[in-house]
Length: 188
Image (cartoon, rainbow, N blue to C red):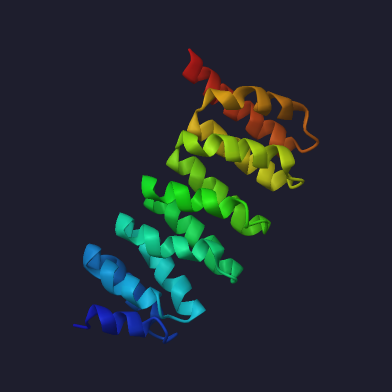
């Protein structure tokens, strides 16, 4: 049987990577600390693999190390970090995700950061998300932000979301209707 460290090494070998990933996921919590130790010194491709494994493990101990990648130069690492933090779903990810909102004007990473904030459901994200929704020119960012605000459930979002009911994008209009229905249910 291979050790966790050997399995982490195997992630770099295309022929063994899938089996290694599955074995690390099966190892569960036991694999988290060795994965985090390797994360700080790995090449970008292995970092991406490790972050994706950590997302499957959903261990809150990974939040600080993974959060560092929210501002990575590599866009794929920023996206993987945001996805991972959303999957982990721990409140300790709120502050790093909020900090990453402003500098991540790359829409790909920004959408995943917004989704993670919505999944976490913390009302501290309401004001920054409302500001983002109102200033972005991307329909994808707007509808993702509206969806996140609906999940958060903060009633301060009702009026700004109502203004999106006549947006040019049908995706934005649809998400606004869904979010408003959710928010109005909370009012009842």
